[in-house]
Image 1 (cartoon, one colour):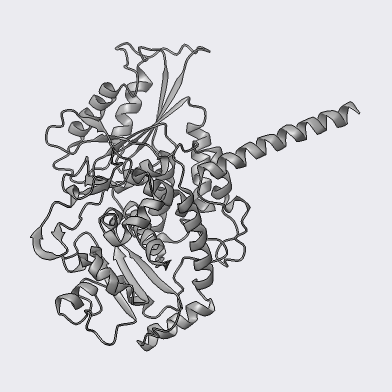
Image 2: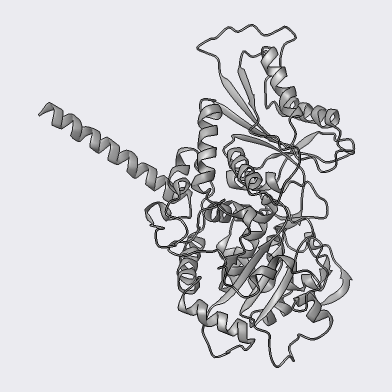
Length: 498
């Protein structure tokens, strides 16, 4: 009887723990996939990270609005009804191929994302495209090239967000450029597409890259959205986080306020919803975490991105990093004497995760804390998962490693990131904290500063008045929650109004 009583007691405790975990997950995350089977998607039978992330990631203090949760549930149903290989998708493909739109049809509309640039840029532009889909009832499909294959789990239950291989002109998507005939900007500029157009095209190409023109950026004008809504297929090429500009549009304003009452959590919620590491990437993450990070009492992520080596020499950047560490007291100071190991039960430990294409920054920090004791008696360990030397955007293995390191950074208690870096933007957004930013200035004094918002920055926003294209306006001063970025004076990002 005692044995059975003990077993019963253990089961009760175990059940309580499980209830607590799942309740916390429900509050902490806008996903509901812990109990959802993905076996019907045809693309992936397993997504360990979806269930196991709670074991590694701190609970988020940022709770999604009930309206956002409801909107995402509705979107999942839409994607299931309209996704690849469904009857609705097949009918829409016929319209695309024929070039003729059935305006009486209630069939589905799509936004097809075509990416370029590095992984951070891609994740930010996918998130922007997804929010646009949410706002306009369009299904998001991603053109997955080889370099992006196998990075993420499918985000939506019982369907896929990957554009099928039999999609018309799929093999030409990567070659789409700004001057393409079906480019919206070109068609508006040549006046071949406007409100008087009798026969609307079945698809349009949207060039929303960093180097898009003013005519391309008419996408962000309410007048043009009223026209674009009639086109069933929008093929969007982008490498930027254009999401903040949608918060300047009156046609989306009311809906966005209901979705995101907390303006600086947009990427935090949508990024955690969309991007779950595939099992292949998850194994890399969990092994590295268990081997190097798990036992530390505090984890500090330092993300270093060098854009121009000539203007950012190693010693200059290293001095800036050390100055920031001292100013913000991220790590204890070291003594001048050589290190003599003297383990103590009362010692606290900190671990530093360095991510950079170059090894020198890690070596300097590792030598400093490896050869000298700290003045506080704390133990500091320094690690760097990789040092590729240069960015290899088109290599799948490079992107796998990049995603693993972004995720590991997002598990940090404190983040120090490089100005302008989309790699850092994604890590801070997934983590849900305002990072310390290494300023990209000639003489950085102070060397770094605390971000005022954890949202990513839109580097190349429109700067014109939609009603008068030739009139330049400060788009960072139109509404309280869209202002200029801390790390880029002309960029735009979301802030809480207060």
